Length: 358
Image 1: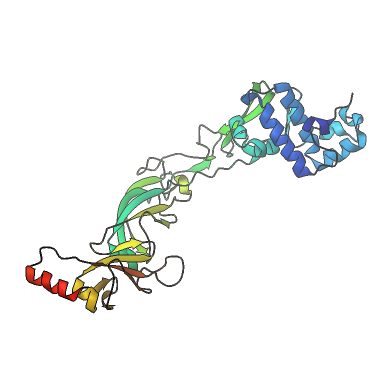
Image 2: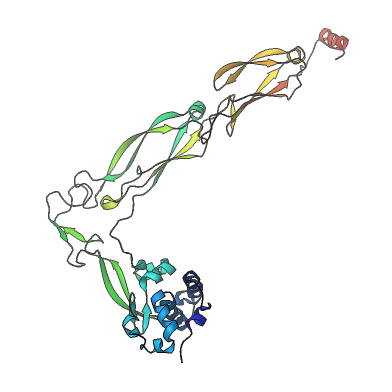
């Protein structure tokens, strides 16, 4: 009896390739044996996807139906195993399976059919630098020093003593990978792993570097000059690409992240890109008006206090705040005025206030 692959995956005959793939992804996750699913059902799903997920195979299946199942449709038996691996009657397309399951593909060692000798990039580093209030407002240049792994200068990162012979690994024939067949509940499955003799490099050398012992890395103290942009705020970070630790065997370096801490100011307070401060004035200044010298990030400025100013009044100095880090212009400076009420007045001063009747 012919198998209905469309019914197996739960899609209509006119379903698009994306719909077929999505249906397989959903059902395969549900029935995968490693997740407590039914191994036989999983085999059926994979078999259906090997056909419907391949436009050429799907076309022949639609055309020949049950004849396809018997391997009689245009040499179907010849292409049934194309692009995959047959083991115990179970055909697995490594590339599709790797795409579907990612982590599962890595478990079985085929990793989606895209092996690479490329080593992992170097480790990212993070440091904290402290700025004073004005450095954060206007930007500055800082020098940072720290220790990290760098490419070995003696062997230039390849791990071999200069002048020693480097040749292809005989164990893996220079591929960096070795293959073997494992028996599993899904049948015989071919797995791949890193070559133990060359560590996945595909190359071996007769003598390891005398300075780094073959690691291709050495420890060194480095100094960097960093431009800190105007307007940076507490807790933000500056990313310096490729300034982290060097990767093994000349792989790309990681990044360096500089986390910002800002020292507080005794009179000025930052809120976003605005500056806030407070001034205390006397009753006389509030009633008659006055001029105050105000501390700002741009230096001292004169603020006019008009007659009859009430306690709690807020004045704004437009664009006297902080430069916007990701935009134009600057924030503002807000000054809150508090009127100080005197205590312990003499009888004479009290009499004066009573006569004023204000």
